[in-house]
Amino acid sequence: MTSRDRLDATAVAGLLLCCLLWGLNQVAIKAALPEVPPLVQLSLRSGIAALLLLGWMRYRGVRFSPSDGTLGPGLLAGTLFAVEFACIFIGLSYTTAARSTVFINTSPLIVAAVLGAFVPAERLRPLQVGGLLIAFAAVAFAFAEGFSAHGGTLLGDALAVVAAILWGLTTVTIRMTVLRRAPSELTLAYQLFVPAILAPLAAWWAGEQWPPAWGWLSIGSVFYQAVIVTFASYLLWFWLLTRYPATRVQSFVFLTPISGLLFAAALLGEPVTWRLVLALVGVVLGITLVNRRAG
Image (cartoon, rainbow, N blue to C red; front, top):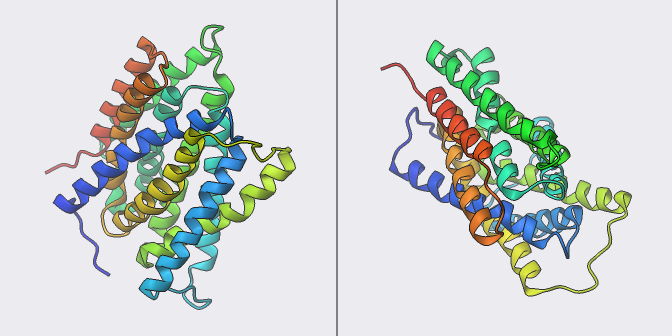
């Protein structure tokens, strides 16, 4: 399996597509929440995508092997992934999709900070450190709005930030373990099978009920989440992540909050405050600086 040190046209096109799909994903989750509880959504999304991936792996001849060394790192990545999305789904019950997508997509900052500390090739230069500080300050600026009576989104915002940290740690786990050299299907399998098991248990423990009736919006939302995003786009994402530099791949996610903000305003009619816009600018600037490399 080859690994490249730069993003080529294929990588850029794939990353742009992922970012657009993920920007709409937050809106799809939020739109279905009135009918389908968050952990039930997560259970369906993970279960359907896991079954699709299982068929794809069988077609491609990709199998689990006790001797390939991926079990430990895979279970860790899968658990991080499961808790991350539990935070996202539950958090969207308390905050807007626009705010959630901005906070969640600060995960490249976590990746850059951790890899910069432990991987010599990913070490951050002063300009990149400045980018981290700008982005973190922007997040704190937007987060402060959740304390106000007008915002009232503190819990949801906090869960989105936790999700961003977990997403970043999942990427670091993949980058720094044998998963980096594993087939992308196997890497994704751990991300889907673990939440497919844990999410239904969490939904049962939380007392969430299966919806008595399903509208077309909810059916379309679950289909979009499971088939388009969780199966197809994540398969593409993990393929890119195992073949290109993690920091550069992650840097493209700044497009996700931009598209998410636009989708949330256009489709859900959510308010986009000046604080949130300024925070988004700060995050984009920070991630751009983090991605800069000296010539």
